[in-house]
Image (cartoon, rainbow, N blue to C red; front, side, top):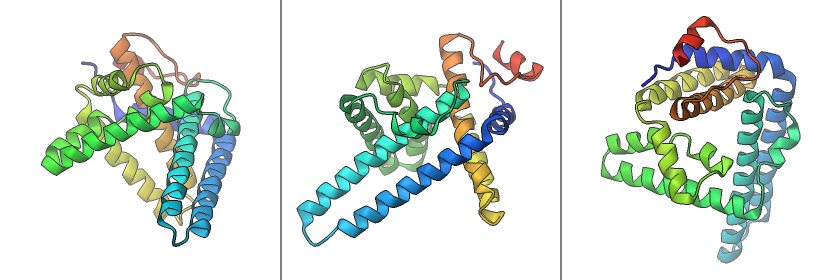
Length: 228
C-alpha cells in the first residue's frame, strides 16, 4: 500500500484552483444559482396534493442529481487538465440511462451506509469511507451497478483512515472559509472539491498501477516519491 500525503493533495488542489480560479468561481456561482432556483421553484409549486408533491420532489431530486453529475464532470475535467467550461455543469449526463444508473448506484450505496449506521456507528463509518467515491465511479459509467459498488470499495481499501482525515480537513477548511465572512467559501468549496477529485484520481492510479498528471501542475519530488 502506497502512502498518500494529504498536504500534497490540498497543495495540488490549491495550484489547480489558482490556475483556473475565474472559471471555477463562475461555475460555483452558476451551480449555487441553479440549485437555489430549483429549490425555490419546488417550494412555489408544492401544494396540498400528496401525489403531485411526491412527483414534484422526485423530479426536483433527479434534476439535482443531474446537476451534481455535472459538478463532478467539471471538477474531473479541471483536474485532468482539460479546458474547464461552465456548460460541463449541464452536460454530465450522457443519457437518461446514465442518469438512472447513477441514481440506482448511489441509492444502493446510501442504503448500505444507512444499514451500517443502524447496526452500529463503526460499521456505518467504515461503509461511508469505503464508498466515499461512489458518485465519481457512478458518473464515469465504466462498470455495471454491482461492479461499480465493488470498484468503489476496492479503491479505498487501506485508505479509509486517510479519507476520514481528509474529510475532517475539508470540513475545517470550509469552516475557516465560513468564518471569513463567508467570502472564504468561494475558495474553500472549490479547493475541497478539487482535492476530492485529485484524491480519487490518485487512488485510481494506485489501484491500476498507472501514471497520471494533474492539470499540468508540476509535482514536487515528495509527490513523485509518493507515487513510486
